[in-house]
Length: 383
Image 1: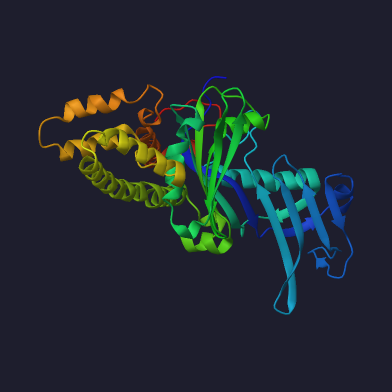
Image 2 (image 1 turned 90 degrees about the horizontal axis):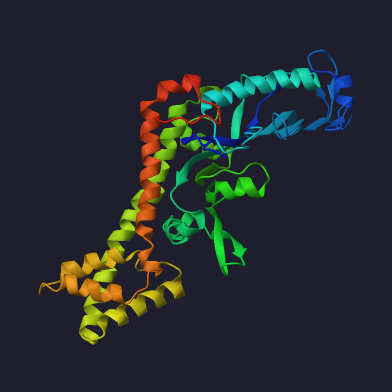
């Protein structure tokens, strides 16, 4: 398949609440196998036309996932409670392309009409509020996703401890006798961070196959309280595309760019001291001993000490006082083969990710007026 990805920051899955139910066509609802309707119960909701019902659940999976209508106790009384989860469901490409806020609001209007036409449900959507919000940046990468595993593991390690444990899903590759990383998770009860192989996910789900390698980095705001904290509101009508992109850029810089810069500074100092130590302990064999210790530390701790060999060379050059840097560099390279993990340019891979996301953000800000006519998934757009 040719290139179908539109690279941008946007939204995917959401959960919304606050539908006002004006009327229900009970005869139409009873005909649907995907509808579970309880017309009578201990607590019934009275509609404007005088009819009432207890609970309604629709599993649609066309325009939306599940739509639930019921009652919820608040203080000493019961109120109408509604909830709908909405995911991009492009017929050809699934959720490969995320959605702008303008497109999302248009989708809600389509859902409102669809509820009326298909199920006989008349709703008011003017007071909808978000209770879950997934914001992602989806972009093409230069290599197979699994080749970024050291870079991504480091990026997830650098996240603040408030995000809890790191989870990683891997696929067993019997042919090459290895595990291939597919997904990295880290989060808490309010927000989750997820990085995964979008190409493989779409393929394994049987949705589509694409030629390019695609990475998705996603922030999931899991509660209405968190959404309000971040944006000052969770009312759908008040959201704009700039709110979404600016939030993503701020979080991405704070959690990934800034944390990586701090790690590089500390790790450079660590390498600096290790070189001094090994030169002092064994002037003749310091290079081999240093490489061995760095490999052992990574195997034990699962965090790189040398992300790529240039990181080590940078510190060796700073310490070189006798003009032997070039000879030392050549000597170290001779101790490696072409497939050595330190020669796979993993620092460049981190930089590729950070730079790509920043460029997408900048281009979206420049092109923000174009959101009024957003391209459909499948169009190839260049900023």
